Length: 566
Image (cartoon, rainbow, N blue to C red; front, side):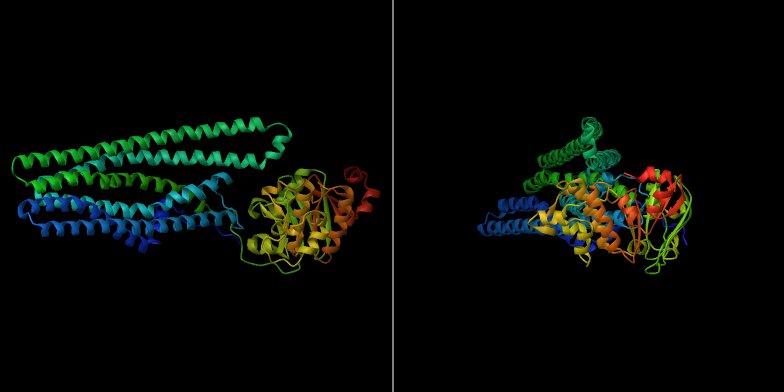
């Protein structure tokens, strides 16, 4: 039975928290190492100030040598902590991005479709760019903390020299972050819009690639390119807007940091001139004012990256939290069973009712192509069972009560435009590498000539979408894949429309022979396949209007004769 999906939608903040919780160890190590790096960077001007102070006071070579040794330790600490800290964080970042890419891909490959509301090209963008930007949060938090360490160390060191210098750093840092926090919100909104427009451009590219052959056929490729250019231009304009916002943010951050550094330097100079701090403390203050710009810059940029990660996480949540189109049952069909369509009303189908017994070979010819497409969609469970009236039963069980995985294992519905993948003939016929029916499937589909044509045989390389194969070869390759699956119930839709009549006749006989004793349904108008079937169902105006063998229907039904005779 179907039950409503009551899962709470997963917001982007949950995704970010999940990413952070899953990388606590790496982030702790990264924070410690990057904290050492920032502390070492900040300690450098402090050490210089102390060296000047003690050198001017003691004027001893021993103190100078000790000071040089201390500087060497600081430099070594800075170098090694940066090297290993970034290695830990970037490894965790890359690994986390991989995990989210896999999760998004897994959602798209689940047997039960999800109500995502995005095109395939948009989902691709989510699985790549958004996954990468979401995983950046793994680096952002440790860098934020380590930069805070540098600011605190600088503030404490300056405060020990003079409390006014320490307070100036603290107050200035708070003011800078407050101003930049306002700008970062605009970055988040602009980034979300940019990602959406880039995703739409990606979806348009995917659509164009899918329809490239027909576009060339009727000369529509130029119009299609113009359509893509318009979408891409829209994405470009938004990218320029985002770049402007980012530029404003970076420029403002840099200017504010420079103002703070100048304020610290001028204040320290005034205090030294007034005799309230020593020359060594002045050197330290000026050095810290220079060094503090880098951690302040990093610290001030982090809100921007947090907003970008949040925006990407929200887009990933659209895919990961999308509810399933239907909630399947848990039962499994009985092996070797038949197929029953009981009073199904969907699209052009009107109370369609028929039954195919276990082991029977039945052909269905539809006078209206739309009815054939609707029937194939219902049988392939591309239409949720609650989206149509009536019941489809497989192995005596209603599809609504079966798990989608078990339906896919038990029944295969092969479309007339089956997709061909980049790889080899073998991997297209047997993607899982477990079928024992590959030789028989190749022979039955009359793909033997294609295999024999190439020295590599079944290992012949096939290009993306079968670009190096003819239409008939692609169709026979798709048929071979369906036959090699050797499912209990096989539904084929127009499997021979792109082959010649002689080949079609041979395929019809081969399929009937190979599938003997296995339930097989062929939706077709091919006389050869109709003649090879045990019986033929005539589908007209959404219902079965006639049923008999192909030859009896030819002899006694004029409408059937006109529809299928060639």
